[in-house]
Length: 341
Image (cartoon, rainbow, N blue to C red; front, side):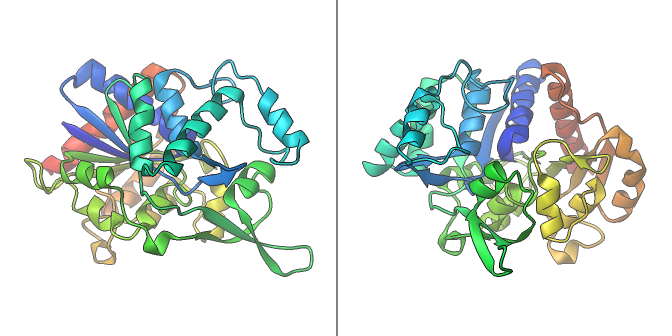
């Protein structure tokens, strides 16, 4: 079984780690390809920073700081302190010394002419990711900017990292802008993985700035919907996992992003934002065959099924490797049922 995951952020990384465990336990002949959001990326101090790809790399290689939830374990921050003293980097964005090694290597390779896909492949050569292959969603830069109202009432834009990290998404966003997205295209690895996929999973990542950015790349949504064209089935089922439990975001500030685009912070509302691929509403070009909500949101299932989703309620909290693996296995079982149906 060839599994492709759309993912971003810490929640996406933990879901993929659980999926890898499920594959190792119960589907040892399967493969995992992950298409990772790059809309959070930015240039800082002459270095290209890729937060979601690095979270995935560090989590799967066992290098992630599980206490903080981001960065490398055993970090020091001496270089970052020097950069801040020189005024080169802001005091609200700290780069660990080990993490800087990754950023320097990436930036050197990019300046030498390698593509982001080349760089991601090279970074993976150092770490054992347990057979998981990572792909940037695109090789073009599509940094996300957030438009907010200034103190004078005029609109101004912040880079997503400033809005997210410095202000913790507490400044109401007027809209999001992925600069350069109109001229971007899916990365070659992403397209190849989707074409050969037997299953596509949408991780419990931010629906707006992670999954939404991936799907906003011209040609990506069509490639996801056509996933499996080169597989034995000819059509890969697409199963999403809710990042919302009991009306609250599992991690991060997804609620602030959903509010900006007019979507309620509710597991059912997020499913309808993606849209059903078949059944009621299919003419609107929906994405999902099936949608998983947490057991506490089980009352939403009947309505979601009526709207065309093969919905189910399962435990979504990834408290440890066992619960994360169980969630991933439930997603694969749901995909199998959707394909058979």
